[in-house]
Length: 367
Ligand SMILES: *Cc1c(COP(=O)(O)O)cnc(C)c1O
Image 1: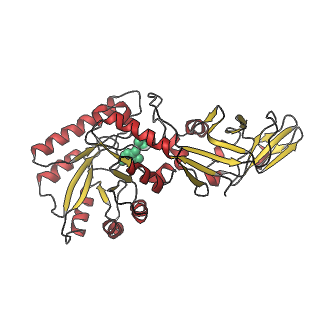
Image 2: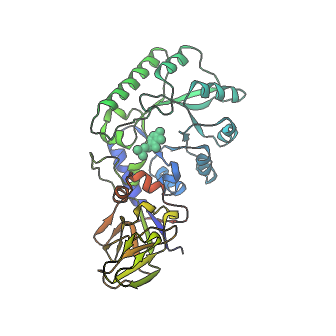
Image 3: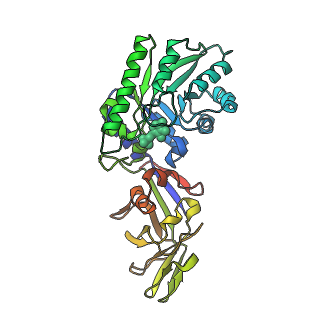
C-alpha cells in the first residue's frame, strides 16, 4: 500500500449532489468531471453520481471522454474544451457530444459527419463575456438565419459565467441578459433549443436566474464553495494522507532541506514525510504549509522537495515512523482545507485539488 493516499468519500459526494439538486429544482444536472474529476478520480466519481441521479457528464477533452466510455459509462458526455479535426473519429466512435465554439467548428463537423444516418447531437457555445471559447451572439443569429446543417442536431446552447463568484453582480447579470435575449431570438427564428445551460457552481449558488434547463456543477460536488460570499452546506470529498517515514532530532542552528531556507532556532524534532511537489504538494508550501499529526498542526520547514517534505513536531507528543499525517482533511478536531493550502499558494481550491498527482493512490470509501 502506498504511504500517500487520497481518500474519496462517496457519501460526501452524494450529499453535495443533493445540495445542488435542492437548489436547482427541476433543472437537470450535468456533473463536471474534467481533470480526473478535479483530482478525485473521474470513473468512480462519475459512476457514483450517475447512480445518484445525474443525467450527463462534462469533460474538457476527447481523451477524457474516451476514458469514461472505456470504463463502461454510457451516459451522455459533453466535451466542453473544443475538438481538433484529427480527434473527430474518436469523438464519433465513442458517442461523445461536442461543444462547438465557432462557425468554423460547426462547418468542419457538419462536413465530417455528412454521411451519417442519424444527426449528431451538438451543443453550441456562446461567448457572452468570458472571451474564451464561443460564437458571438451575432454569429449564432447568423447561423440560424441561414440553413442549419442537417448532419447536426442542436441539442443545447450554452454559455459560461466569468465572474459569478464576484461581489459585484453586474457583469453576470449582463451575461445572463445577453443569453436570454439570444434564446428569445432563436425562438422567433423557429429554432428550438432543448437544453439551455450556463451555471457553474457560483451560478448555481448565487444566480437562480442562471439555472435554465441544466446546470454544470464542478467544484460544489467536491465539497467546496467557489466564493467566500456563500456558505452552502457542503462536505469536502477528498482527504489527503501520508505517513511519517522518519523522525530526526537536530540541534539548534541547523539548516533544513535544499538551500537551508529554514534554520532551527532550538533543538528540533523533524518528521520526514514521503510526499513532495511531484505529488502536487507544491513547492510554494515551503516554510508556509502545515499538516496535521496527532490532531495537531505541524508547520512545513525548509523547502518541499520532489518526493519528501519536513515538518516540525518538536511541540507534539512523541511522533513515530508510520504515524498518520493529514495533508488535507480532518484529524481529531483539526482540519486543513483546500482553501487553506490555496491561501499559501496564492491560488484557488480548484488548482490544489486538480493538482494532486498521479502517484497519490485514490482510495474510495463509502462513509
Ligand atoms: C469547469 C467548468 C464548469 C464547472 O465549474 P465549477 O466552478 O467547478 O462549478 C462548468 N462549465 C464549464 C464550461 C467548465 O469548463
